[in-house]
Amino acid sequence: MATLPNPLPRLATDPSGRSLGLQLPPGRLVDATGDGPWHEPLLWHAEKGSAPGTWKALGAPAARVGLLPVLVDLAGCRAGTEDWPLLPAEASYPGDHDAEEVLGEYWSQETDGQVSDETEPFGARWPGLASAGVLAADPETRAAQVADALHSDRGTWSEWIEEPHLALVPARRSADIPAAIGWTGPLNYDQDVARVCAVLRSWEDRFGARVVALGRDTLVVSVAAPPTGTEDAEALAAEHYALCPDIVARSGPGSVGAYARELVGATGWSFWWD
Image (cartoon, rainbow, N blue to C red; front, side):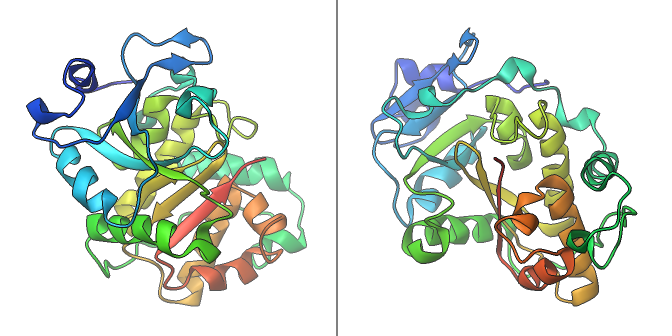
């Protein structure tokens, strides 16, 4: 995939990041992949867990030098994200994919042309993309708020992200972070994570979404322009179901229509793949 110049190699000789205008805590550069060492670092992550305020204090300045923040869940990882099976060589470029086509393929793949209770109120036919929301907050401010909530609101978020650490990734936009590191969370659903990133790009454009956290198979995004009405929420819920059916069928309320009610005004969305 197309990439920008990677500032991370500079941290090998300047771990504090001062030459980049940063003040980083002790951390680790990661170039390990499921296929062996990558030709340059894929990401940097802090050795210690993050806390409320970390995103704003470290992530925002890093973004100005081309390193985008994301929280990575390192629960049970002795070697940090080196324990993750990252496969950057398997990711194409997100810009080569059309989000509506990708979601339509996912929907058809999941429904197989059959009407079920899960797809209510739409039946088997793909309903198309939801209308864009209206910004209720600055997207970067909302991302910092959701990042803080991952630490402070443990009852809501602990099942998604157990041990968040701040990571910095060289990427063009937040939606591209999974492809930039070769994240394999949805590998059993789609072997090319760039297709998932194409959907995330569309959500960035329509809903002010930002990728806030990644686990081995979990994803949390912030939302600055959530739907405010039922009809728009239902169309968006169909997109979520297409991308990640389990959030409706297994961990959710059982139907797209019922799940849509959870999306009205929601400032963050969570996904997981088995």
